[in-house]
Length: 202
Image 1 (cartoon, rainbow, N blue to C red):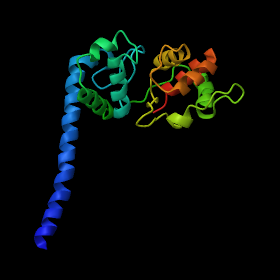
Image 2 (image 1 turned 90 degrees about the horizontal axis):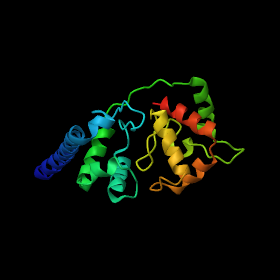
Image 3 (image 1 turned 180 degrees about the vertical axis):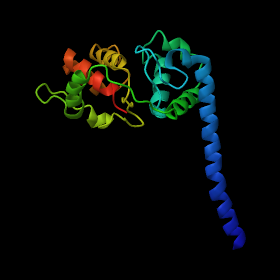
């Protein structure tokens, strides 16, 4: 009986340690890839300094891995990203996702606080007069997203605006068709306002 208890205790102790070691190895591989490929545009910790490139710190690992796979397959178009991922393997996508998800998220000031207040209304309540759904309904009230939907909080306003316009024009089609429907109903003001509000979330 004592042997059985000992074996059970060992199993309960070793399994989490092995899982932790595997996760640490995945993150280490992700960091290696970032230093080799990603840091120039996205920063070593996922805090890109250019609004052209998204901030990736704190982004969900599963979502990032799927986007990278979509770039590689051509489902998501980008003349910059496709060459960067063409030689990567699925396990590399997971490693990059794991690395960026573990990076600390920073707070960012909002460039135009009054515009952001308009965006706050749209983000939390939508626009019932034009049929725009609230962003918070899918991405959460703080823009945290889920394993399958992106974290939006703290993203560059310009990057978010560019993505909304890409959904509107059907230039980006690899994600939920719901985004196309929403983006087509947003006015120019609403697009900019939502992007401004999102940039200040944490």
